[in-house]
Length: 347
Ligand SMILES: Cc1ncc(COP(=O)(O)O)c(C=O)c1O
Image (cartoon, rainbow, N blue to C red):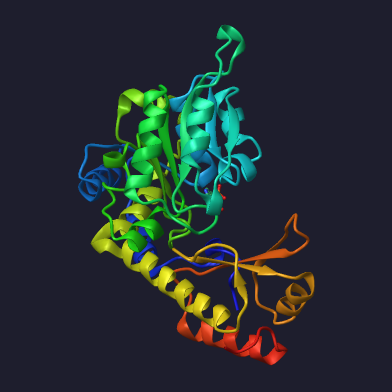
């Protein structure tokens, strides 16, 4: 059974249909096309705000370009200790911005501790010697599969703005957070103080499509230039825009995210009813298990695909991710496999 990532899923029908339709005709290059314009209008409608939208094809590019536009090359970006931007992007934000640095903040279950943010925001300033913190980066939903509520975002964003920072959101799984909280896209972004959102569609069912959504152009100037000079302005951008359009239209993005979340909830029920321990609350589409090395070896013997990671405690984290394409029968087969290897006690 496939739980390695939501990246391992294929492309959802809505995106494929939109791609095929766009591909059946020629169109202007470099984003100067009707589909990209329609995408801009649809994102503005979905977020109830004027926006500038920059489609790119990876989340790393989206985050790096957004941060490059919000920060000077000598700026500092605050992010969670486990944030993708600092753990999984091989310093791409530093390279693409010409030098910004990333600074890690603690916090339980993937969420930045507001006290930790306040502490660093008021540290001593040694003038030209000090890295000025220029941006706060929040991941929604978090790397631990939890989500920030609109109030939690507003608290963190308020503190960041008060300290002169811009607020960036890595929304690789933003859709899952919207579906899980029931809050609107606006409530979880600009209304709570987010200035730039990297809206990820790839994990949610696109082929390769992410949109940098700028709510306040004054806080992320020259994004178009950053995108071009790093080689991320696609001549056939309309095919990326078409993916995003197909994904957003008629709320397909939220339906798929809701489904992935429901599958994770079902998966959580399967493991907790066998008395296996969760590392984090299951709030979106990821389930994290806290296993002994022996239990993890047994889990591996089921043949299920997931991400194991050794923990400092000597135990092993197993990350299982559901997607738009996970089925109830996938979860049932996994439950049978657990019973087959005798992992966990049935409650
Ligand atoms: C939180 C988060 N942000 C961004 C990304 C985007 O990564 P990529 O550059 O592989 O598309 C990922 C993918 O794993 C992610 O989990």
